[in-house]
Length: 234
Image (cartoon, rainbow, N blue to C red):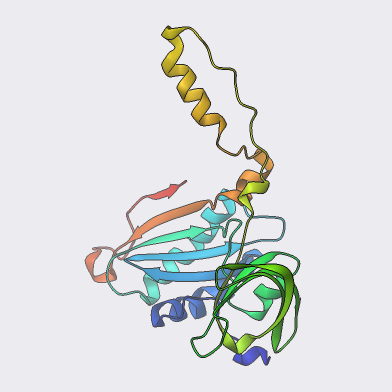
């Protein structure tokens, strides 16, 4: 695939494409990869990542870097919420580079309407300039009795993402129920909590997409041309 013709990591809307072209070279100066851009319902979500994982502090740096740039060029109509976030464990795959990074991971691939089958889920084992190789365990929502090798043309991919197996997460041991009626409510709470998969601190950054948000108003709505709204780190 010619890099000049490779799709941009965006949701495909004109707004997302404009924002991508504007911020991609800027975030690269921080050693950060622009993974995806989504423009939906008044929220502009800029998804970034970094080798070894990205911190909330670095997300805030990206936010501060691109926020005045977006104010200056106004690629987004009207008032909107800017959200700079990490991809989390299930991340979109839009470019060849994204697929290459996901080799060895489980993925789900939705194909364009003219191609059958429509959905393939399995282990991504290889990527080249033209196609993907997926060892499929599920086709169109139906589990296969044996692993099937599928070769998928990159041009036929409508949508794809990595898949995280939440059942593989270790679970906390159940606590013994107390017979004391006065502790009934506390026991019920502890029992309910114990059924939730436990995520250690090291995996938390990967399991939950951190984000930093800021509200933007159109330039004409601001008296001094600056963004006076707060930035929230979550």
